[in-house]
Image (cartoon, rainbow, N blue to C red; front, side, top):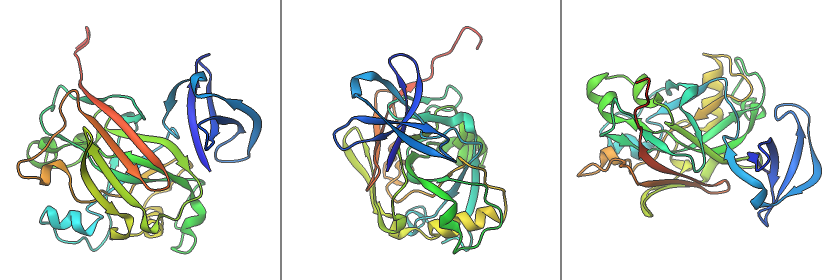
Length: 270
C-alpha cells in the first residue's frame, strides 16, 4: 500500500492511499495505530502539494553501507554500522527545493537511499523481531556538503543537516521486501547511481536491531540506510549540485523522489 501525505487545495493536511490511476483514497486515523480507508476519492487536481511521508522524531542514517560505495571512496568495509544523525529540520518533501546553504554552497552532493520508517517503539529488538517494527519504506536523498564533511568540520553533523538536506517521499510503501531493490539517482536526467539493495553491507533487519540496542526508536523515526556508488564526490572530476539542477531518486517498488536545487537567499534578518 502506497500511503501519501498531502495538502489539499483547501489547505487541509490529509493522508491517503495512492491508487493505480493516480487518484487518492483518503485515510482516517493514526498512521502508527488504527488506520482505515474512508471511500472518499480525491483527484490529483485537488492536491496542492505532497508532504513528507511522516514527521519524524529522529532521523538516523548509516554511512558506507554499500560495498561498492566503500570501494569507490577507498574506505575499509565497516565491521559494524557507521551511524550518524541528521537534524529533523533538514526534512523536506517531494518537489520541494534543495537549498544550497550560504555557509557551504560549493560541494553539495546527492546520495540516493532507501529509508526505513519505524512503526512502533523499538528497544533492544532481535534480528528476527526487527521487521515487525517497520511500518514501511520511502525514497530519501542524504544530501551532504562535502567540504564541511571532509575538510572544514571533518565530522558529519553540519554537513548532513543543513535545511532541506533530507528530502523524502513521495510515498510510504508498506508492502515491500527490501532485500533486492533497484536504486538509482539522476541529475538533470543523467543516470548517476545504479545499484540494488542486495549490495547493502548491513541488511534492513540488522540496521533496525543494531540501532534499537543503542537508541530507543520511536514511531515515525526515519533511518537512511546508506547510498550506492556513483556519488558526485567520487567522480573525476567531481560533480556537485548547482542551482537549477534537478536531482531524482528512484527505488523499485516505491517510486521517484524529485527535487530541484536552488541557492538559499539571505533574508532581512541574516
